[in-house]
Length: 200
Image 1 (cartoon, rainbow, N blue to C red):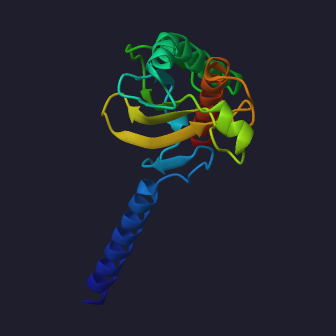
Image 2: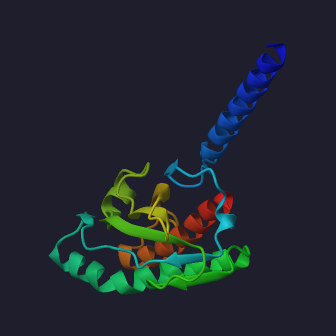
């Protein structure tokens, strides 16, 4: 009887240990605190992937603030350029940090891949008059990006994020959106690469 009790206790100890280990595996990674808002769903570092696929930015459903019809037409014409700048900036930062064996754009997946999806959800052309007369961040020009990282094989969401880029003198500058948006798209790429690097 004592021997049986010892076996039962040993089995229970092993089971408790396995449950604790499983819970530890499922605990999400710490938030990098790089972007405006971050939600991490995975407990596995991104270094377990050898490929990242950077999808084109979606922009068709974006909101437009401080934008008239003429300005909107100019922003719409800028969209392909902003996507290119964002992708190139992001890919360059990932390469400089030696993250991932393969960095791809488009839909092709090779090896164990993580997919980066992104969407510009707001274009704010700002107001030079508000920046000049009011200050304190009023009338700033910015891009608002939302995105997520997804396992290419399972479709499981690994992380979700949001970043509002007002950089490159976006708060104080008297330059207009045509000068500021390209620099902000570049900064968004750099910010997202830093976020990914912290999860790697």
